[in-house]
Amino acid sequence: MVSAVAVTNANPVITLTNLVPYFATNSAATNLWDYYRYNVSTNAFGVQFEVLNPSGDVTLLARYGLPLPTMGNYNSISTNAARVTN
Image (cartoon, rainbow, N blue to C red):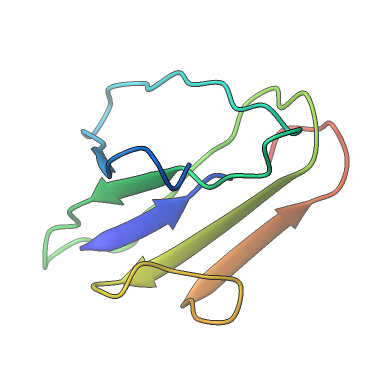
């Protein structure tokens, strides 16, 4: 399992499905985290997550299994301090 974080502690972990887009918005004023889960098959060559058309800064963290990723505990990070697709 890969857990990806888009930037809401109050929200549950959302399960993503291959080839099914997921659309969400998040207010930068709240500075909360959104948690997503995606199961990667054992014979996969890789996995790719995209943040399209962000309206502000985005940090995407990925982690294999639990615990959920944090800024100090992740397997992969992608930071985007500009409003460009990441």
